[in-house]
Length: 154
Picture 1 (cartoon, one colour):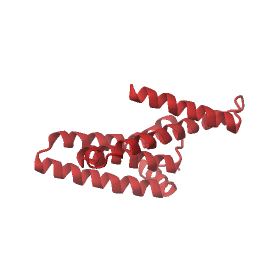
Picture 2: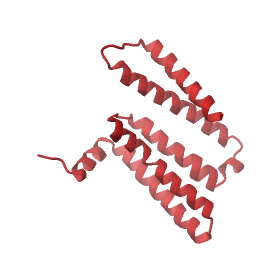
Picture 3: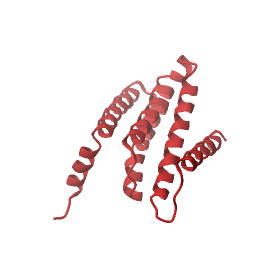
């Protein structure tokens, strides 16, 4: 029996209930902010909201295109990070209101980069030809996060 796109979507939602709930709630919040910004004429913020909605599509796109199963915790963290950076930070001016907001987001992005690097190495480690020790995996994930963080700052 051939799966339709709808049944595949329902199965994906059942597997990732938490990620889907966070995704749906944050997406609704962004849409409400977008509508509010249209009514008050903040066109730059409308663009930021549209960009945020596009960024929310990246984790499912990566999973589908590369046949990679992202950990639910990583997926949820990415959604929350994008929401905090773009909607709370830029539109709600948290960068101005809370002096440590930028530091908090930089620290969080470092952890996300490390987790992403660890996931990539874990995928490589599943290969029979490559077998990294846990210490090597940790060290390489740390180096990956530091390198991406430095490149991000440049």
